[in-house]
Length: 238
Image 1 (spheres, rainbow, N blue to C red):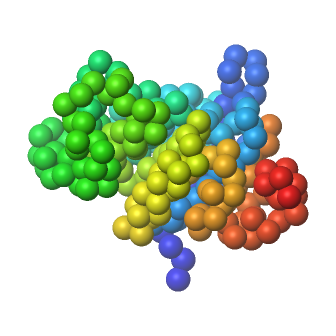
Image 2: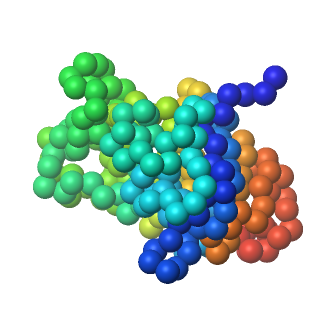
């Protein structure tokens, strides 16, 4: 039985001025699956996420979320529908407390259920509970990454967009972040994971896509892409 598609991207293109950053991208994310998007620096990974969340306008193509065309919807409307992003470079609000950063992630819900959501975040990331009253800017890079992910989760995502969650982190912290991503996947959350760490991402992905110069050049089950010779040479150093 075929799964419902949470997201379907059809012929998506995007430009920065005259520069074409995405060119005719097709991609699907079935409900409850983790899909990895891998590629080199500057390949268009973050641009694709920014276009999905509405920060970057699409110049052609369509984005369907639950079968509804959202290509022209503004970012806040996409968040209300359940598309929540943990951005590249974390982008936490440094002067605000950790708890206030988390509460900001829930702004589309009013106050209903926010305390329960906070409790879940503190279960997932105990260090955030210990430091909840401190300014977010006092956290280490790895802790800020946890906060950025938790803030996105406070939006109760139906699709979680993770942009380079392992960037700049020590190997032990990368392992910890990926353990959390696997836990989220096991709860049935639908996730699009953008990563330069192709091995880590494809190892846990149901499906994967390889992007190069703004185009999808390969796709398939995560495990198959891990064993693909071209992927191994280009991204896994094999």
